[in-house]
Length: 292
Image (cartoon, rainbow, N blue to C red):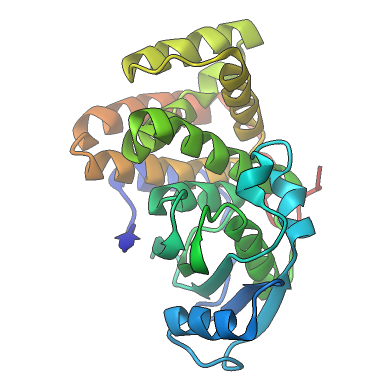
């Protein structure tokens, strides 16, 4: 299965004039990350999914401890497991190409969930294949994507951005169990379009806005889920303006896929216009910035 996001929408392009240039990443760079606990036969099957010969691309190893560094406390132990099995192939693309996601044996995370989580972390133009030797949740694959991209660029993604990406993946997955992955993704994206407003709100005021949005999607959030979404909003507020702009591309594209482009593009335009008008100095870039 593939979901491809390409190009830039006019609303995003108009704001790019105000943004610092993104860090240049050479296109065509490839990496593979393999779960540390795969057997030789399982490794062979995964490389078949990737469509490349073992040894043709630089390989990195991801351990269960590394997966837990991002997911523990967010994901039930049953979904993290005690072994590392999820694998990633990533190839960088030209700027503006977007993210192409292909899944094999991933039964919890969807293409849209990976797209949003990767973009939040600062990975925006790449072809990504996620694979496992048998059906798994796929949550641990995010760690592999982070590790591969950092190896390609030689620089670290910010800890804040990586944590926000992981948290977004988990929360979207939990919401998807109630309203489906498409609506869950759209709900989280609509929250992102409100970040200029939430920055000046108290926690209680943000909770009210989250509940209103949940009501629109006929979702009844538990107190724990409400606090999770609030935590995600606060993390997203800390991302730099360049990352917010990339997220807006994802918002508009997701809306376009759901035949809601006109409605959401208008909301995005007005919300983001206010945000950029109110911000004089942008946060430091995801790459090379101070880690949390």
